[in-house]
Image (cartoon, rainbow, N blue to C red; front, side):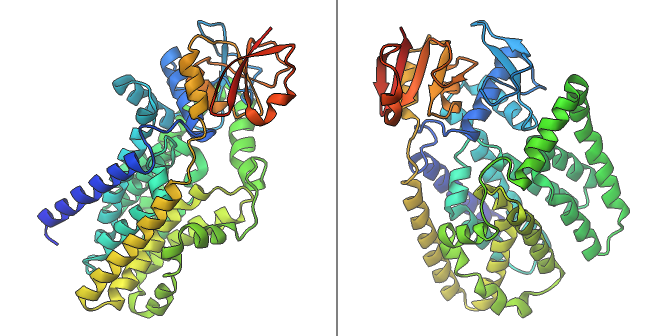
Length: 451
């Protein structure tokens, strides 16, 4: 395809993906999801409240309660948040400053990073497989059609920012801009720390495979350390062993040992792939059928990339489906290579691509409709009761209430001396009506006031 046709292709693809985010995933309308999405928004809001851009701060009951870093105007304290580096929440805070605070602005960076990642995948594939004309197009069509891509590109989590920075690092490395590659890897590390453990060995392997001098890798590594180190040294100087214990031992290594929950057996990702990536997973035998035809040092690079992500995360006791999302990029590229080799005639190839794309998008649509708008009730209650500052939750996640009620601090369980309490309809009978009075409710969530 010439440049004008390629640009037209991307325009139509991006338009479809944006509309999908709006109408299928509810990027404007759905309330924030608990845990990661709502937690990032809370920290980003605290950046704007405190004007402290380097130390992530939170007010949840799971944060480090022994240190009060900042006291808000409502007298609620904020504690250090040691679980993640600050770069994603800094991006969110900048977005909030420019466009205001909302569900959409929380999710906007992910959509931008997702679309930009597709361009980078296209460029990387064209660079390492110049003879294959349709593989770059087929890869990004299949990848962007999936439910996982659809959901992550419409969520205010760090995954798409991390993906974009890792791909940018790989692209710069391939085109021999090693210092830029190191910079973008460092930004990825400052987004989600050791989640990018697979990238340095991948780049080292690329040099070995292409017989490029190894000294470039050590230069890359040195520049990466020089960018990554200052924030970590600053946090260590500020908090000492508490930072080491929580950031490295509890959070990072705790995930591998299962301390962070989400424990699943070693085959869990295979099971997930068969359930949620069905149209693509069932085509994977095509890679083995065509392996002799496509096998060269560049396909070996893709296989190594896929295994570097898939094996360690499978061995880790804690498992979450988006951890292995980078695995799908080399895997779908290998599949696309096999498909282009299999179909020598373009008409059957285009018919096959159209059929598979429709099949994947149909599955994506069905899965998007099962994603319940869990926290709309909490959002409604917060809009109707905007002045609450002393709030606890009982049998509810606390992250979304932190965002919507904007208390800065939240407590857990009704034994606390807070004035207001949120409780799920399934547990309302456990609350002593002589102590707590119901003042409002919405969609199965009750707001109670202490008598």
